[in-house]
Image: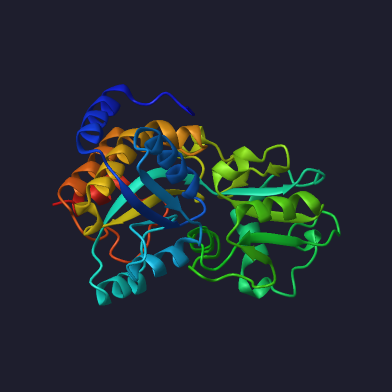
Amino acid sequence: MRVKLVGLALVSLSFSVSAEKLSGTIKADGSSTVFPITEAVAEEFGKLNRDVKVTVGISGTGGGFKKFCAGETDFSNASRPIKQTEIEACGANNINYVEMPVAYDALSVVVNKDNTWMKDITVAELKKLWEPEAQGKIMTWNQVRSTWPNEPIKLFGPGTDSGTFDYFTEAVVGKEDLSRGDYTGTEDDNVIVQGVSRNKGALGYMGLAYYEENKAAVRAVPVINKDGESAVMPSSANVKNGTYVPLSRPLFTYVRTDALKRPEVKGFVDFYIAQAPTLTGEVGYVALSPSLYQVAAQRVNGAEAGSVFGGQGHKAGISLEALYKAGSK
């Protein structure tokens, strides 16, 4: 077993599961960032419920919502809140859902191990590197910072269906979906790792869990938010203490309210919430506060449909606790 499961929660859930003898198939898809969390939960849940099959896909946050709003999946993993267009797509198909925050993440800026010149990078330099105006113009590293070498730039990042792409462009460039297009985009974070590790002049970005898993292949770069501030590394500690801004963000999963009526789905959701505080850290992310997991449980048990973000996305520095306190019934 990957981790020690939370004792009291497991006793309660085990009794319910054994009494109901759960069986069936549960389908999840969406964010590759959230994938390791849901996969870990599914693995542990499957050990206790051999007759329940949980499948977890990674078509990206946007791709996942397309399937979810068409009624093809029970869960949609998302590295950003649901967009207004996706809310409307779900509404058109009478798909109602409960929004569950599950963890915090730190977007990690990574470079090749042989890159010895980049000791840190500012948010302004990241913008200069990734904004649409940089396409075809900012092609060597000395154009970003004059003391860096005349080395060709090779960029890797999430594809446009990715919630990581949406959050990064919003936080760095200033508007969601606003990015230069001449980079290698992919929904598979392992492709980003491989690309950066094989190109000396490469830079990419990904979720904290994938960086932690691939420290031997790539190097994370400390980020400076504003002039005069210190460079801060992506880490669980720096997410918790609030210093890694603006690249810290919450992660979510969404579950259809009609699917919650199925015993195997409700059992899986209860197990997810109970074990998330342990499993999120085990796979490299940052657990939410106990009060937020309690809110998630209340929303599920009350079938509180909808998103507290109203289709507007999550802004850096906004408290999740305040949002869900205001948004809960």
